[in-house]
Every structure is written in C-alpha cells, then in structure tokens.
Length: 137
Image (cartoon, rainbow, N blue to C red; front, side, top):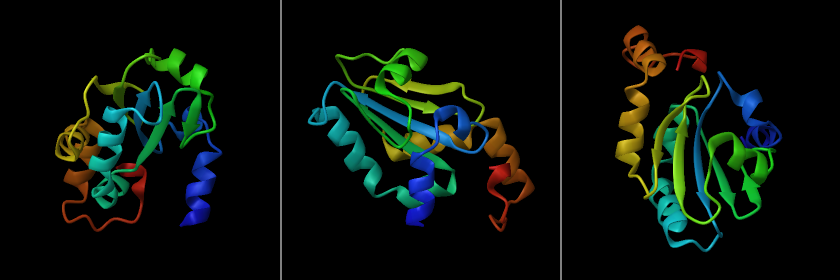
C-alpha cells in the first residue's frame, strides 16, 4: 500500500488522467485555517474516497503533495489563487467538476463524484460493488 502511494507521488496530473480523480486543496500557507478544516473533514472519509479513486493533492504556498508537478504549474493549469483557499474536484477526464472557495463536506464531495457519468455508469454495471477492475469507476 505504501509503495502504491509513493508511486502515485511520482506521477504528474497528466499521468493520472483516466485513472484517478483529484481533489486539489490550495492555500497560501500550510497553516491556512480553511485548508486545515478541509483536510480534517476528509480524514474520516479516506475509505469512500479511495473506493472512488480519489487522490488528494495539496498546493500550500510553493509546496505540493500528492503529485510531482510544481505549485506554479498546478496554479497555472487550474487558475488556483495564491492568496486564498480553493478546493477543486478534477474528474478522471481532467475537467474541473467542482470548484469551491470554502471547505466542502465529504458528503458533498462523494455526491458530486457519484453524479459523474463515468461513476454512475460503473455503479449501474456493478450494482453490488463486487468488481475488481477500477478502470470502470
């Protein structure tokens, strides 16, 4: 499991496309109150997020965790502000599915993912969750 997490960290957002959804948490500093609230809110929802192929990417000032891309590249790619909090849900196809300037609840995040066409199609094909191939999620 740890090796898989480390392998993900060496990937760029482009390499994750079609394999993972990204939850991007951006803030001007690691001590940002909203960023800390968002991370704490997600802590109890790791299992449902992992089941939905979500990788959490943080961009705090010039530090990035979760991918190998630079903070400057990610800020440019998704028009992330340097001076305030933002959270984005990026679909497997690379589109910005959700953009908020306040922390979002895990329930809101999961509902947004479950409403995505690719996820809805997978749930319809495998209604009992008994599937081995996560490419369909």
